[in-house]
Length: 231
Image (cartoon, rainbow, N blue to C red):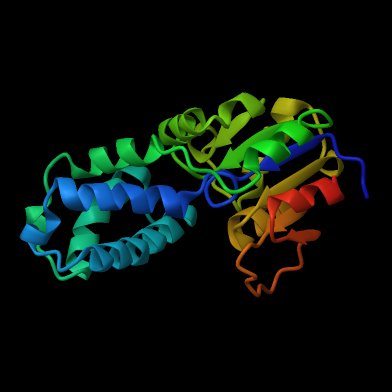
């Protein structure tokens, strides 16, 4: 095992439980805004449409096909259309309510805080995320993750998105460190693993669902507790 000094964590789907937090918010919004009266057949229909459209939009965002403004502007109109509801029925404040409500949710993956508490005694730990600056900060505060990290790097602060190696290089420059002293931990094969490989940084692929990927990460784990054995 190499001797690392800096650990870079992804946030969504790695520490902060994006799916659980989003599902709670969507359920609340479905009830509060009476979406069944706006042409949304069921919550399950709404939930499926959200994940289909949101995943596609974030894929586009990560490769520069859409910017933050248009992602947020187009998200729920596309979701309503996909679900067979009328996009003109969307309340004006719906997107803002979704963002505020979701980023205030506290749920994290099992053992997130325990492993961070263990690791901060031995390493300097940081976040590198493609998420939006204000929402990521709110997520970390509402979930209690903010106390663990020294440097928070977002695509908005750097102008680069994972897997662009320049976002990793920016982080290393801020810390006056080099690739061989760093380790990236994340769930996304493209942004986290490929991005770190391009920056010549070792990687831990967090893979709780046992996905098959073509890339060869340095390490693979299915539970955050396994980091204790690696680090």
